[in-house]
Image (cartoon, rainbow, N blue to C red; front, side, top):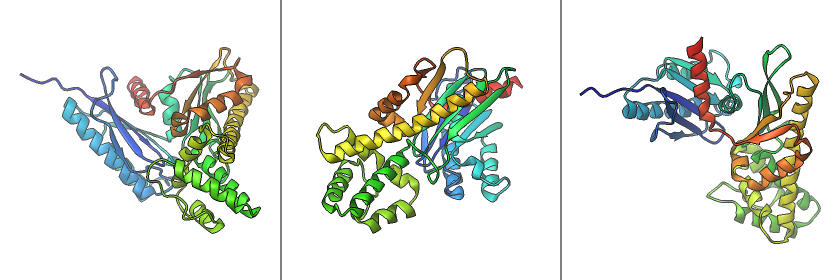
Length: 337
């Protein structure tokens, strides 16, 4: 008896912390159970060669799993990668990436990770905004003008040197600045107390500062990848949610509130741009909060929404879709051409 074969779609979300791949059935667009794969960091701006290896490792492993389960082929693959625009066209890393993905799927769509999330949450004819708080931060909006022309607008997303307010990296950076300020003021005991509480509240076996000293704080902050500093932000969130009245807990709540305001400011600028260009929809604009720091920090979500409370008549929040679902939109668009 012949076994029916079903084709599958492959989608990858490659960011500064990890690369994730997931397959979807091409007939009913449901996830292929047992196909999910994780690999190393996939930010193409940080370490292009290493990121390409992580992406191809995840894609090949996920494809093999999906093929073993369904027996079919992969007509479409989508990659959403951080730093994609920083990869020089026709560079060795670019050629290796495109050649490797092209051997897996009949058609490929490559976008940055922010557009991946935008396309996963909104159809091509729908207005909507995503607010990203992960290792970095940014705000993207899909809108249509008076003539119906589609456009993607953005605010923030300037990188860790110029912005990233409201991201895990920026939260940790703000905490380091507070420690440095305490040391500059000669308040060594207060700095040691905050340092010890932060270290104790940080989950997992994360690389931490060698000591509560100006030199050690600067060394880790300036010389290591930003994802390592971002990985310390959960400790600040845990302290902020602690019920005690310690100075450290109050300081962490202040940091989270300030970072939430910074990211809300990006949203306000983008809303102003929509109004100014006549692209603001007549109905409320759907807004999706996405990214790891939003997902794992309820207090930060609440502070962000509080900062935007004055715009409640113009926006409505919608649950975030899995970013890998963008492949469904891309597949539909490619078959409609």
